[in-house]
Length: 150
Image (cartoon, rainbow, N blue to C red):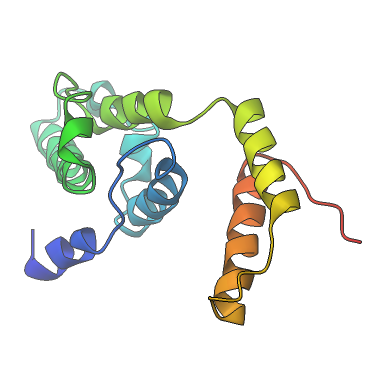
């Protein structure tokens, strides 16, 4: 990988726990799309789809390895133990998603509670406070939960 690609990865948030998963997932998906590797990660382009064409197999394995590297570089050391036996990017991503993506109903409840209990923090500037509320709204939107505008 080129130095700029490695620098891109080091600027991504690290996956530490279930609380950090939504932001990590958001950024890693953007990276998947940007690197045109989403098909390998979501399983729509499998190694078995490459047939017997050695060149296609080699290219697929190289792309898969590049994104395995991206995942490994963006997760904390204790998280890596969960994916050590995975052989593909899809397996790694699915395993992390299964472990760290909270139950949707539980997550909705916690986020709605955060939203309704939000109080303006005078020690922070206006944009930071607004950003906090927008972040909650974004995470709720990801879970197909809408907030009523009043």
